[in-house]
Length: 183
Ligand SMILES: C[S@@+](CC[C@H](N)C(=O)[O-])C[C@H]1O[C@@H](n2cnc3c(N)ncnc32)[C@H](O)[C@@H]1O
Image (cartoon, rainbow, N blue to C red; front, side):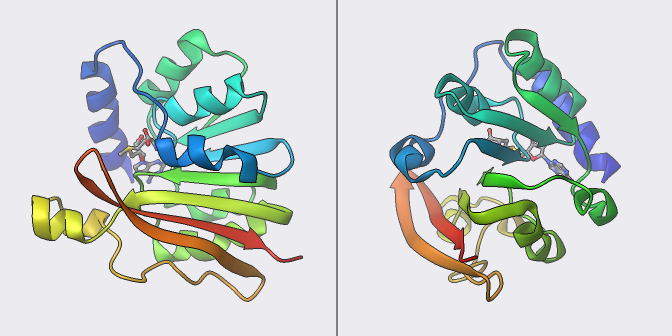
């Protein structure tokens, strides 16, 4: 929604020009990626997209924030970008298919989650990495951005969860999972 864009545009405008490091979960999982294309869903200013571009993947970053996208495009023109509100499911349904989808520090709506299988090629994978509910209980982080125990562990009968664990990363409680499209 529009308020998400305003909030995140402001954050990216305030942010120091140095880019953050990619998430270790993706670096550790890189051998499990299939094919060549990656959709970085709510990819922000591209810390993970840049890592995968430099690892020779064909990367598309989607985010609502124009300012986040500007930061990516400044130095990495090869990254394809889509400025889109993920609450607009009609637009999401028109996206092409990808071999892999990555989600980092973003909690999709349930309706968006249910659309993801349609955005995956056969045997495609989803790598999902975001705050676990313990981040709320132990660190006071906003509950609505955290995954409850076993929330988002099931997607559809054509998608199976092949890996799921909770990790403590830099003192934060993170839920990490990998899904694979069976057909
Ligand atoms: C915590 S940041 C994570 C960014 C990136 N995935 C990362 O790990 O660095 C959350 C991102 O979600 C994006 N976002 C929030 N609401 C959105 C929406 N409705 N549609 C698309 N992107 C959205 C924000 O602009 C922001 O870049």
